[in-house]
Every structure is written in C-alpha cells, then in structure tokens.
Amino acid sequence: LLLQRLRLTLEYDGTAYHGFQRQAGRMTIQGALEAALARVTRQPIQVVVAGRTDAGVHALGQVVHLDWEPGLDLPELLRAVNAVLPRDIVIRRGEGVSEAFHARYSAVSRAYRYRILNTAVRSPMARRFAAHEVRPLEVAAMQAGGDLLVGCHDFASFGGKMWSGGTTRRTMFQLQVRREREQVTLDFRANAYLSRMVRAITGTLMSVGRGETSVEEVKSILEAGDRSRAKWLAPPEGLCLMEVEYPDSQLFVRSKG
Amino acid sequence: LLLQRLRLTLEYDGTAYHGFQRQAGRMTIQGALEAALARVTRQPIQVVVAGRTDAGVHALGQVVHLDWEPGLDLPELLRAVNAVLPRDIVIRRGEGVSEAFHARYSAVSRAYRYRILNTAVRSPMARRFAAHEVRPLEVAAMQAGGDLLVGCHDFASFGGKMWSGGTTRRTMFQLQVRREREQVTLDFRANAYLSRMVRAITGTLMSVGRGETSVEEVKSILEAGDRSRAKWLAPPEGLCLMEVEYPDSQLFVRSKG
Image (cartoon, rainbow over all chains, first blue to last red; front, side, top):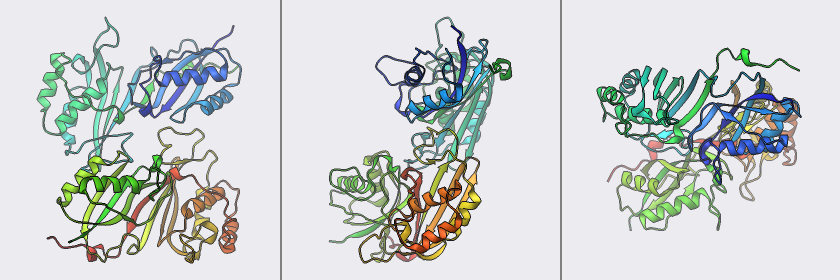
C-alpha cells in the first residue's frame, strides 16, 4: 500500500461553522473537508491542520496535510473535491510532499489578520469579515500597545494552553496596526498562538484605541501572566488566518512520479 | 396632520432577499424596511425607491423617500430603525427634504458596479459580492465593447421595459472596465436602466472578454433592438447599486424646524 502525502491550502468563510476541528453532530471545516475527500477518493481520510481556527473565524491560507492512496491525478482530485465541497470552503492549492512534511509541526509561523470597520453605522456588506467599532480608534496608541507584545513572551494573560503541560511562551514576530480610511487592520505573525490569543490581544488593543486602557496597563497585563486580566475578546468574524509559513518548502516537495 | 418627507440612503447585502420590491410572503428589502419603520414610528409607512434591485443584488447607496408624521427626532429615529432592521440592511444616512424631492423621478443618474473574480479556483470569501469567471478575461476587448454602449441608445436588446408603453431608450454616461490583479470591475453610470440591463450588458461583455463574442457583434446586438439577441445574464451576486445622483441636492433639503 503506497501512500502519498498531500499538502492542501484552504480558503474558507467560517461564518456557518463551529470552527475547524471535527465535532460529532456539528458543522465544522474539518468535517466538511474530510467528507468531501472521502467521497471523491473512496478512502477514509483524516487531515492534520496547521492551526485550528475557532467558530466563525475565516482563512485564506490554512494548511492541512493528509495521506492517501493515489487514484486520480492530483489536479483532477482537487477539481473533484472542490466540486463537492460546500461553497464556503475551497482548496486553493494542493501538492505532493515528502513524509517529512507535517502541517502543524513543520510550520515556523502563522500570520493572522484582524479587520475592524470603525464607523458610526454598521455595514451589511462588511459584516461577515470585519468587526464593527462605533467609537473612534486611536491607531497610534494601539500600535504602541502592540509593540510591547512583539518578541518572546509568556502570553498566559492572553490565552489558554493548547494542551495541559504545554508552555504559554510564544514568539510574536510582527504586530502591525494600521488605518485605511474607515478600516483598522491588525496584522499578526507569531511562531504559534495560545487559544483565542489573537482575539484577546485585539480586544485589549481596541480598548487601548478607545482610550479606556493605557499602554502601561497592556504591559502590566502581559507581565501578570493571569488569564483573568485581559477581559476583552474581539468577535470571531473579524479574524482571518492569512498564511502558514514553512521553512524552505522546496525541501518537502516530492518529486514527480 | 403635518407630514415630513425623509430621504434615506440604504446599504444592503441582497443575498437573502427576493429583490427590493415588496411581495406578499417573500423576504424583500422593502418589506423589511417598511416593517422596521412601522414598528418604530407606529405609523403605516410606504417607501418610494430610486431603483428596484433584483433578487440577490446589493446596494451601498440605494435611496428611498417616505412621508411620516414626526415623533422622534431624526437621529433617534435612524438609530431605532437600524436597531430593529436585520443585520443585512442598514440606513446609512437620513435627512428631511422638501416635498419636491422624489427618490425615483428626481434622480438624474444611477451608478452600478459589477465585480468579477477572474481566477482558476472559486473564492469562498469573495463569493457573496463577486461573480466568478474561470476563463481569462481580456479587459481591453470588454472596454471596446462597452465603449459602443456609451451615449443615448435604444437598449431593447439588453433589457425589458419597466412598464408597458415606456421607452427603451436610455443614456449611458459611463461604462468603464478595469482589472486590478484578479478582480475585473465594470462601472456603469446611466440616467436609468431597463430591467436586468446591467447584468445583460455585463454577461455580453464577459462573453467578449472570453473571446467568444466580437466587439462588432456587440454593435449588431445593440442595433438589432431585439431582447433575444443578448442571451447572457451575469449572476446577481456581482452587482451593487453604488450611488443615486440628484440635481443639486441642497435644493431639496428642508430647513430645520
């Protein structure tokens, strides 16, 4: 039995789903994806994901890997799976990779984007992919708060461990806040995240942007290492997993044939 | 009984609605808006719209007028109505206007935008607000076809009369086709439109962009004045009513008090 490892890059509108991870009796991204893969390949397929996204969170560049017994050729497989996937999930790319590739363990960084529409009136056309904040956000203050979080820190105040015994230290490579007219965007890149960490940090920085929390308080919250200190949680619809980065991905690509 | 005329500017995500116009037993924008207005004002309210949009078509700048017996002050009314409207409809602005203002008859032009995502793979995050075209679109050819439609023409090949006895002549002030990376956008501005005219023109120009229909054929379709000649209809999700223009709108604004 010759199995081939595939790496798939996914885009999804997470609005209708209870997050990525398979759960009995609930619509999840993993459930829908595995069902479509099984239907096309007629093999039981389990995928391994780079980073689980929460209920309502979107992705433009989620990555999974899976092992299958090749039947169809790869472009044909991808077309067939995309044809049976629901309209809010798609495989953007797929490639054969070596067995050394692991969607989660090989990843060196994950980039998330959080979008906020900062207007007096809510927007029906933006509502699925951006949070809405009525009060004016001071972007320079948000950036100053964000700057304190760049680097290697114990982020225990901003999220839960992914499994017991794990560490709460993570390395934030980038945290950029910018405004383009009425849209405020936060771009994160870290080696990995604690559960709900991006939304907790965003909620905290929004509080800074509204002038309710000072930049100094962000520092004290970070240093406290106490999950009860960061009490804000930005809503899921503003969050999107943009990209998962792997070290020299050529290393993993399996040569043809 | 002193009635005041209001002009409202609306944004909506039309995905869930059977178009603007009220229909018994069906979800429509007009039905939802009038229900919310009636609930807040406790008056039976009927709105008059600048341009009816089809099922699934969106708006960023739809305009309606209505007459009401003032109770609340205007900002309070708008906040209250927006609070009871469904999340996919909102009043962006409202102002008191003179009785000379009529949302439909006073309008001098309507601007529509049609968005096409021109990629090999469909996009879950773009799907609600853009059509998807797999084959590469040649934008210069589409623009050349569109140029033939600018000016005052009988558009009978591209749409139905809005009422029997009406004319099928319309004046197209602008028809611009452009590409930004993978997105192709068509911007229309005309004095008015026949029913489904923007989608029929877009469908025809997409056929030109795919190289299936020549620019000369667009001319011959226009000149035929025969609705059966333009057989393409671009899907509704790509279409958005951007703006309705009124002559010197200050003319209509009612002074305070």
